[in-house]
Amino acid sequence: MIIFRLLGVLSLIGLSSLSAHVDIPPAHQLTSLQRSIQPSRLIFGSLQNKNCLNGESLCRVDIDIINIDESQRHQLLSDAPDPHSTSVSPDGKYFLYVSPWNGGRHIFLVEIESGNGFQLTHDTNMTIESPVWSPDSKNIVFSMEPVRSGNTTHRSGLSEIFVINVDGSILTKLTDNSSSDVAPKWSPDGRHIAFISDRDGNDELYLMNVDGSQQRRLTYDQSVAQLVDWSPKSQVILFTGYRSGKSTIFTLDITNGDQRALTNGMYDSYLPSWSPDGSKIVFTSRQAEHSQIFAINADGSEQKALSDAQTLDFREPSWSPNGEYVAFTTIKNGITELYVVQSDGVNLRRLPTGGIRFYLWFT
Image (cartoon, rainbow, N blue to C red; front, side):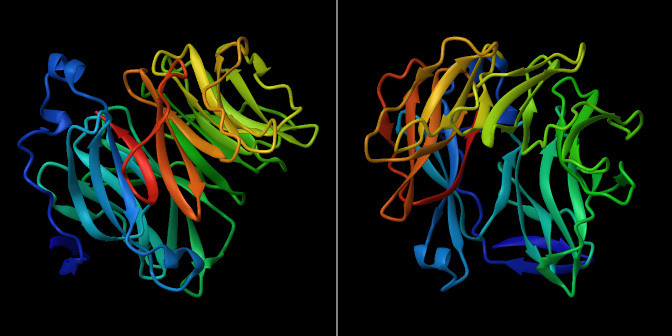
C-alpha cells in the first residue's frame, strides 16, 4: 500500500509498492554515460477490465515499465485509480498523474525509486488539467477551474494557470481574468510558459514569463485547437489549428513571429510530436480510409509515412528520447494496443502490453 498524506490525515490508496529496482536503476541515479547506453523504456497503464470504458465499472490500471527490446519488464503500481494527464519528471524521479478526489481532479505524485506517493493539490471542488513539469523538475504548471456542485462534469469554464513546487509548499497563480486560460507548456530553457486563452474571443496562443509577467498574444484568428509543445531549443511552438475546416499542424517562431503551416489542410492532421533534436515532427493524418503515422521535416518538407496498415487506425505518435523509435497506438476489437517502429519506418511491431490506457517514454 502507498501512504498518502491528505490534509494532515494519513489515508491509504489501493496501490502496491514499486518492485525492487535491481536490473533497471532509477533514471535520476544514472550518469550521463549510463543514460546513453540504457535501452529505451516505456511506462504504460494497462486496463484491468475494459468494461469500464463503457461506464459499467470504475477503471483501474496496472502500471508497468518495459524495455523497448522487451528484455525487461516490471510493475510500477498495481490496481491504480484510472490516471489522466500522466508524465514523468525530467529527472526521472517522479511519476505524475491526475485523478478524481473530493469533487474535483487533483495531482498525485509517485516516487519511482521507492514507490511512495502523495497528493500534491487539495482544493475542494477544483479540477486540474494539463500539468507540465518545469525543465529542472522543481515545479509543475497546470490549469485549474472550479466545478459546480462537486461534479467534475459541471465546470465553470473559467480556468486559470497556477504553478506549484514539487513538494507542494508554494502555490502561485499566474493568470487572473474572466476568461479561460488552459494548456500551459513550459519552455525547455525554463524562461517562458506558452498557453491557450480565449480572453480576446478566440482560442489563441499566448506567452508569459514563468512568474506570470509580460503576457502577450502570439496568434490572431487562428482558433487554436491544441498547444502541443516547444521545440528543444525553445524557439518554436508546435500547435494545431483549423484551415478550410481541417485540423492543420502549425509552427510559430517566438523570436520573429513567423508562423508556418506544415500540413496543407486537405486532410485532418493532428497529435504532432517533436523529434528530440527538433529536426522532424511525427503526426497522425487521415489521408485515406484509415489514419496513419507520418514524419515530416520541421520546415514542412519531405513527408513520409511510417505506418501503412490497410485495416487499422494508428494515432498518438511520440519519439523515443534518443530519437531512434516512434511509438503509437491503435484500437483493435475495442482494445488500445501499443506499437513501435524505427524512426526510418522499418520494423513495425506490436509490444506485448495488452490493452493500454496511456503510455510514456522513460529514460
